[in-house]
Image 1 (tube, each protein chain N blue to C red):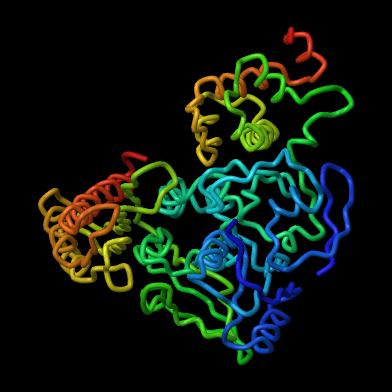
Image 2: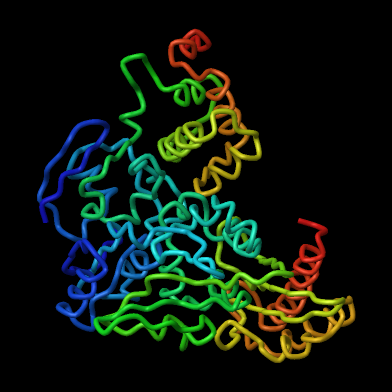
Length: 163
Length: 291
């Protein structure tokens, strides 16, 4: 089936097999390998992307179901103003170790902050409860999201990071 | 890589269109909404539909509203929408209790109320909550709509009364004064299926329990209910003694299976204990106490 999917602000029209999963459409068809592919059972959350602004585990959505929708992946977090505050926060607070869960964590965190710009630690923990970090680095991940909440503008965020 | 077997995909543009697509593709066609139960089952060939009819575009099925003396929840309403609805929280705290512990927030963004009911997993949470509330499902087919009590909706594991050319369109929950409700679940980890969970709704009148609904999931209870416990409680005072006896009847009335989530006796114990906790909390809420 021919589908047209907006990904990070660009429109892509492709002919795909009906059973192609969104995660493989992003990684293999479009070459956007920033979205990771993990458990394949909608448990681990490493494949989390945003579809129409809502986080979804892209191993559990068909690419054809994303037809006409707008997808945001980790490649789309950075803007002309610089890295997203969430990305800055992960740098500033050592929010990643092996990095496998990081893209999904960041897309979930971005959606949380869009909805709730000043979440409590508990709200952050609930929001990321569908994203597993097997390095168990949750403490720093939560701090990274809090950092992003405290530095909402990218430009301001850049000053806080001496990378 | 886990990939579903090939199937034909069609996007429905209205309920009528979905019904005609289902009729056209025959008995092995399935409706897909959130897909968060169906797609994982298709990946491991527990489900192998010939065709998927995508109803995600049917906005008419996505509303939450008060309709007369009932709450109407469209089949396409997402779990996250139920959780975010103050109207639902006000009338039926059991649904917010349950939604907090259904899967995780990302899955709740896409999984639907109708999907939970039609998937009919024996450990599904919403059927138990809706059994406690005496809700009904509205099923539409080519001939029109019919309304079925949720207590008669499930005919076995993964089986419902919804026919191959029918769609569940709406869940209706009667709003009655003087009551409240609660849901209690034990899970191995955040977002997991229930080891066992129980929900209770009570209506108090003049110091006694005028009516009560109890739903239990993951415990092998037929239709997610133990009516004998409800029959016992009607007319009783809402005391620790009557709660304990009703919970005992539930524990004796369920038929759990041992699996990786626990042995049979542990699950029976949970059914009893969680029923007691749910009843206690529902009564406290009905009395205007604990929220």
